[in-house]
Image (cartoon, rainbow over all chains, first blue to last red; front, side, top):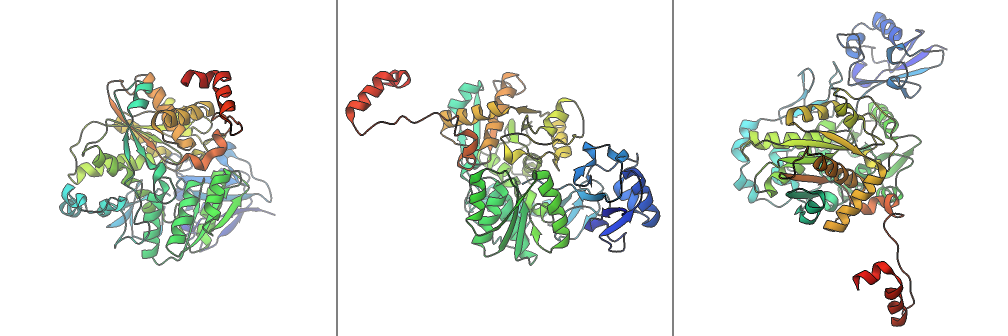
Length: 91
Length: 413
């Protein structure tokens, strides 16, 4: 079973309204490259000019923030679930 | 209100329920027509209005007259001479939002704006992700205005805060995880269900409500910006809005610009912003919270980046205090000023103490401490540290004997 990537509402125009897309990439960085090839424009929404994940974008692998893992180098395996979530305010 | 604008890239969006820029995920902010506001909002027009947060209505993001939370705000600004003496500063004020209406925290400010705006946009169901205070306020204000409410909280919240949401008949969903996980789930729920999520899709409006606390401080000081303000930080939103309120008060001509510093207070067990400040970073590293200050337990603070900018722009600073220092701060405030604050207030007092002791806030200056929520909500945190009762029979002889035998009581005889 490939890796499932959950796409947040602000980016769904790029994925033709798909909420979940799949990838077989082996790291987060590769997954973004892979998605860019199929959904052009996605990468520049997620990465800044230096190729780093934008400061207001939070990426999770199986509910864990990749900043607690290996950031863009975080490995992916079959069945993982990736979520892309904008930062939200306090409460 | 003119539009929503991305704080990062400046792209504009219509005044809808949306919170992030489609391009870079930057937060959206409300854009105002300050020239127009300047002609309507004067010290005189404000003085003629009721003493609530809505006396600054032109600078709050509603299109028409507000419909929710009409009595919120204008909480006391207390001159805290006894606490000032203990902390070693010339002049000290407490902005006492522990008595905000109706749910005893500053969150009533943001919620009255968010729900008034949600109504204007046609929503009947409101929701929030919360560390407790926001849940209480959404539940109460939704009940009072006949709206349906879903509130999402971490499973380990203080008992008082849970009951304080349930009693209003809100749907309280307890999530097995910490606040950042609640937040993540709510971002996904908000994408799926068409509700007004006050701190997700309503965030640009919601967050602006915090400015009212700053406007009130300035007015209650006799139209002066305080030299130092100490603000508790969870996501950092309140702190950035306090700065914005001072900037706007200057911009619309309510007050003369004088130097001011805005300082941030965190709990050591969840201190991504104060740690980044100490290390001279311009961005924080997320943490997993572990502190009794649950209302401040946000490990991925959405406005952390902007809070760090506030320190840089106002010559402010940030620091954090341990759980023991938080309890000491709560007790100190209660013993000297008769104000019982929740754990966040202990954080603010504790950090103010450190900043004054180290001279970052000079002893001959004046400071305002923002105390944002009531102590009855977080009894769990202090009940074992608040002292003990002495039990006797209803007998004068027993009382006399108690005064003789108890050293502490004997000293006050």
